[in-house]
Length: 186
Image (cartoon, rainbow, N blue to C red; front, side, top):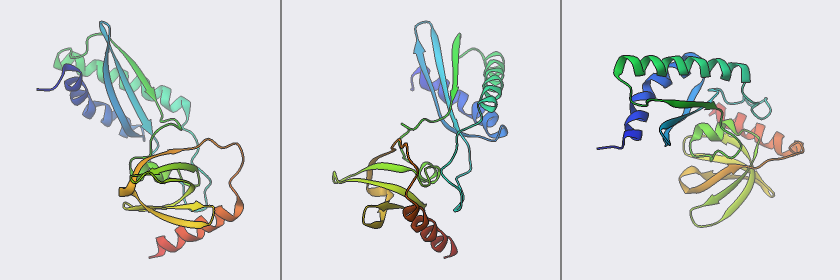
């Protein structure tokens, strides 16, 4: 038998996912944790679309849309609590988007990181720093110092976006765009 917190997350996931999807977002994570006599419900959402070949890196999410989503999620959770019996009791709702510290664990995360610089640790301990290019369900192409390198996602132990303060080198961007176009034509 799961914990009450796990049961609350399980019960709320379809309710929250429905509201999130209707608002045009993707439910990235739903976490329910006790906080004293209350619970904290953390909902992390993202946009569904990855940048196209000729786009720059993905931009941020519209904060007004997240605020509206927060109100809608709150109303849906309250309605669920009333109609199904209170699972949470008093709770605090936090709706946010993934930050740059979100680990890249799914192909969708890698696609959203198009042209971003990432730090990757492979299962064998090898560390790679590169810029994200084409992504399939099995691999990601990274622009590294000496050209392009294809990295099987199954070999990635840990990966995350690095914060940059200058634009990507044009030669890397062009190489990644050409590579992605070629792969998308296959």
